Image (cartoon, rainbow, N blue to C red; front, top):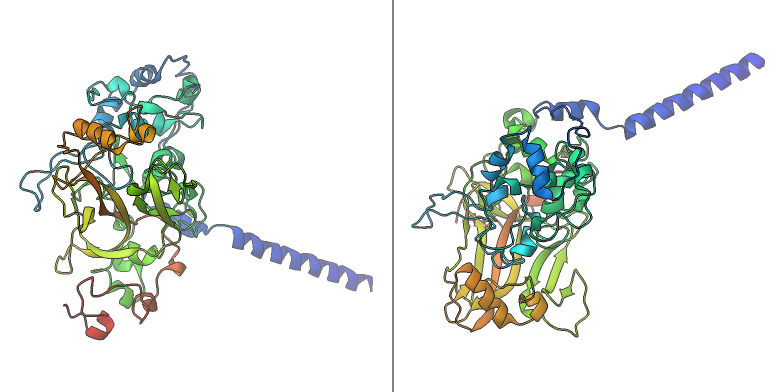
Amino acid sequence: MRSFRYIWVLGLVGTLLLVAGVIILALTPNNAATASAWDSLPTHPVHTDHTELMPGPYEDGPAVTRACLACHEDAAHEVAQTVHWTWQSPPVEVAWSEEPVSIGKANTLNNFCIGVQSNWQGCTRCHAGYGWNNADFDFSNTDNVDCLVCHDQSGGYVKAGAGLPAEGVDLAAAAQSVGVPTRVNCGSCHFNGGGGNGVKHGDLDESLYFPSENLDVHMGRADFLCTDCHRTENHSVAGRSISVSVDNANQVYCTDCHEPATLHEDERITAHLDSVACQTCHIPTAARRDPTKMEWDWSQAGDPNREEDPHEYLRIKGSFVYEENFTPEYAWYNGTGQHYLMGDEIDPDGVTSLAHPLGSMDDPGSLIFPFKIHLANQPYDTVYNILLQPQTVGETGYWTTFDWDSALRNGSLAAGLPYSGNYGFAETSMYWPITHMVQPADYALQCTDCHSDNGRMDWQALGYYGDPMEWGGRRR
């Protein structure tokens, strides 16, 4: 009897250990998958403790930069060659303009906060520099390069107006903490573009600071940093968006790590790779946890009696429509885009596209790609039929005066635009590529998500007569 009891106890213990092992395996990330995910990535540099190297104190941000340059002599010069510093690309030849096009945040309009010129003090808090508060900022003065915004690991570094360190920031603590840029460094600006969390992109928001693998498989399961995909050489970060660029240089591609020829066992999936982007199937929805702004109506701004809600209405900005977990729109995309240029004439009765993808089913370099399309109603000159740049920031800006006429007069003067004194509001659109929030393979789109009566693809808008499964790929 006693022997039987011992055997029973041993069996129970063994069973419990087996169950515990199964649970541990279930909760443990797939180490083999994680390891293979890192096989194609650059090795992170070995961290150097800067506690003794950067003792401080520092009177201002440029003083920190000068201390950094004592060892990293070329770093500020390298940063000064990048669009993170210039906010404008070198001139590019494009088919849709007679002159080479040079665009970026510094000289274009968007349909969120509209534009930088006359609003430097507010917009440039996300610039990788110090003191850009007017049109005369000296881009050649590399003392004003902000090393800390990308490298601080203290958690206490915050930028304020014109990109200067906020009052009370411990610059010595920030300088001593520096390391490889993390998602927090990149996200402090890129997750909050357009005035708040998740506003602009639809696939970049604060949920990506610490995501689960079901939110983003690269950042969640594999714990990637932004710079693992957006690789950096001489401080030039790979990647670009048609919101601020028109060419396809310096792009990031899934195939930088994934070999398409051997990636899928099912030949039917492989057959799609000539026409469908990886993102289309592997990012079924965007803004998966935090909502993103889909519509912005500036014409509603200024009402002091309307109840305010950051996702519905703000007096200084107007009314909004937000969505979460939305299904993207799809368009052919060859990596290049077309952009509205300041001073271009518009048709106020139509929808003016400020940035949209180029490509077609006849272009062998084009793929069907997912996008967020942001719609807005923004100021334009009713005589010249051009979109206008309002001054929103500062004592004479709209957010203080609530006077559209003076705000548009001041902003147009700063941007070099004519202003007749007559204004209205015109509809605009802007395409934002969806490239983040990649799902695990089990959550990728299935055949019927696209090829069914209720499929998500607008086949006719893409140039087909109808679903290629029925029409054999015949074109309109």
